[in-house]
Length: 417
Ligand code: GLU
Image (tube, rainbow, N blue to C red; front, top):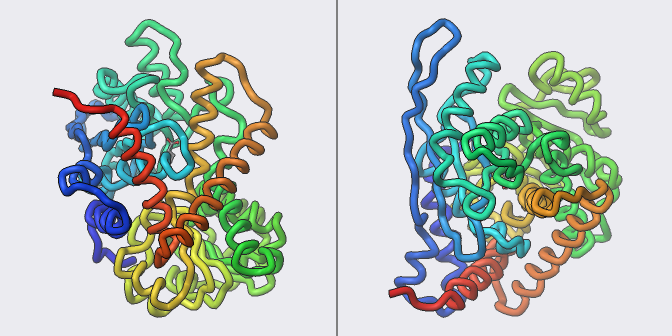
């Protein structure tokens, strides 16, 4: 994996690339490129053996012009202040691309959750939620799952907040279990928007996605669900990877069998009837569609030069460095960006929040239909904007759409003395 780019600088390059096509004052552009505030914490948490351990944690509130700050909380040893800032900025522009009425935020704890017991993780999460309490709220800042967090952590955050506030406010956090106020369809929403984006892209640029070959880097929630749904659309998923290695079958993997193997062994590597590949083999494979679904900077300029994929749809946040992006643009390989392709997660988070506030819950098919409408409309908006402004790629088109929406809200807010 290339580590040549700081994700916060990558975000700023992406904003500048689009701003060049818009008439934006220098001071306003600075506003678009920087978070409003960042909370940095040292959480001291008691371990099961009675010792105390310190964890660094962050919450970045990037921009609230279009609504409450919104975005996930990541547990990963590689979490840094700049990474969280970048991820919070991507949330601003992601929410704007799909026209969900939120700003953007993100949080993270530098921790490898695999090394801790469930009760240690619960104390860590409740400690973070306690520190976040004055900053969050259903009209203020709404956390959600991200890498290595899910329903369990969101339920703990909701319970901590509600207990301390002496209220019931399920909309303070999204991505909860349905029995704690979560939405049906939320778990699969990110992978679903990856599939929908790929389906629309193949319909737009080719004859359709049926029989397209697909390689997926990363087999967490987003990568697995994308694989499953792309296979349902008739695509052939030939390779998937995780941090330990990859499984390849030129005739198409049995996605469920690979999933079962990963659950039993911890990795996709050596899944039955598959050939072992490396992560690099997946990223450079000769396939119609490459889906990076792991972490930032997965595709650096070297990999971008070597890849044989016909198209890239980004399930992860920030998987291409700006240098890699330029190379793929030069090579004529279309890239459908993270802020569209993985926006299904936050879109269904929005539906969850609406349901929480109305205390009225939707069927899963209603959730999926509304998500499909949101993603296909956003896709069409990118295609139109790219043509209208004669833009070099779909990422710049996405930022042009998003920045215009953020700026409209900012300007309509007027002057504040
Ligand atoms: N963590 C997800 C993302 O990066 C979802 C955020 C949310 O639902 O608020 O888009």
